[in-house]
Length: 167
Image 1: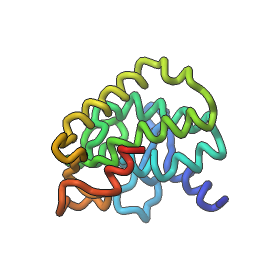
Image 2: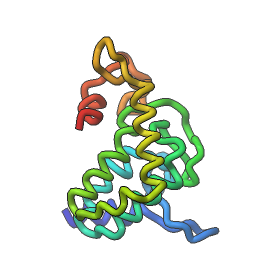
Image 3: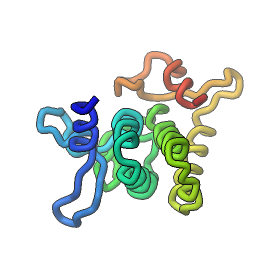
Image 4: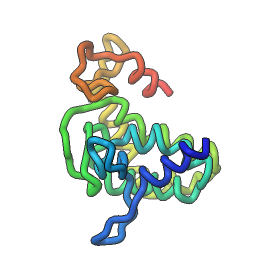
């Protein structure tokens, strides 16, 4: 647990050299194939739960960063730390990640005031808009372009992704 927690805090967060802005990254490790880029899934589904368990204030900062700097491209495969698109492609799990992290944070801290922040409200609306666009009413499922493996889909409706949306 401690080793994973160290990894989640040390390798998934950072401060930029030029502006000293707090950022989230998929990994700061030079061993990772794309260092210092951002994925919602990696930051908010994988690292966030451990960070929240250890440091709720840091978890709050993670959410603020995601819902401000990254929100304009929620659901896009990968992005630079300033929020611009690195690799295009819609991923349903990436779209669901910010809301799932926000829900987890509120359940753990009871900090409902975060929901009154304009950036949080706007980001949540972007997620809902993206969900509406991905929904197939005939099937009652949401489609994705890329799989959670970042490979192009074989089938448009994935169980894992739709389970995240249901959650």
